[in-house]
Length: 289
Image (cartoon, rainbow, N blue to C red; front, side):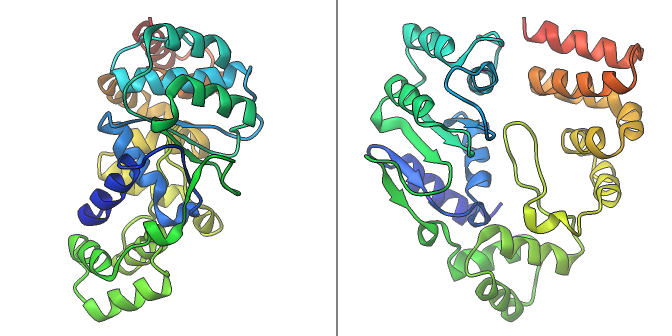
């Protein structure tokens, strides 16, 4: 993560006044900035998939998980519709940080509910399309890497050819993700995943050429279980079963109980009765209260 670019974008997002809609394509790096803000407790980030409505329990679960992540402890139970959860939070008072809502599932009814809950000075929207009425718009030009930021990122990664780095930056039109993917390819590094609260995903541009086995091997060599385990659950369940014990310890240590339970439940459908999965699942549910 380029320090200069990240600091500038975070200041830009945190210094907003009123409702803000980021219209830049995710290639320009917004998920990486939101992930950093979420981890630092500077934002509550909720990413909604398509089809989640204002009364959907799934939407409420994602909001509850984001609030629990922010708090660092399990405060809000899962299983409530978004309306019920919003009422609970309203009674206590929402956190005095930005609520970042991303993904295509932010229907107008849910958006209005969260606007009332959080207040107009702490709402940030990134769902694609045009900015809703009352929202200021922030485009790709505001998030784009400057030449200096791009060269600094290249240097941080150990890319020494400044002229080639500048050419890659121009070809990427300043898009953080496109530029960094090009650097990774030149340096023989694994593809850059997009971080989301529910787990990292390869960007669409990488899907066709994405080799899950190679990526999994690289992540395991680097000891990155938190990223390797979700990838293995999806693409190599046998490998996921072998790493389940270590991965469970890593997720429990981070306090990411809901994500661990979700991954283990997916594995348990394939391997019912496996002791390591059942034990990890119970520990995750105990962490959730």
